Length: 129
Image (cartoon, rainbow, N blue to C red; front, side, top):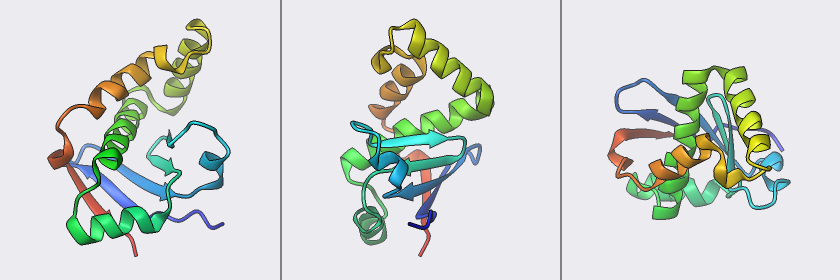
């Protein structure tokens, strides 16, 4: 399957830009994962048609989708702050330190906290046709 960008997300301050990809084989192979971020690229498990229709019709995400976007945009910011290698090293080091528990990684704790914040108006989305 071709790795296509399905939409672009930018924060309102234009400090962060991310490219979202859907239905990518990598994420489908990771049980329990809804998405994964590498630098400015976010890979989601859901089908393109689900998200693009919602965005095209309303300009907004369904509540579960926007939580996932906020979570992954937090990781995009963390990559920007720590650098690509710095993020990966920090993530793996914490994962090992906390007994391979995803839930105890500081980077994930911050991302989960941001899921709950009212940030939807802070993002600008552009669907790529």
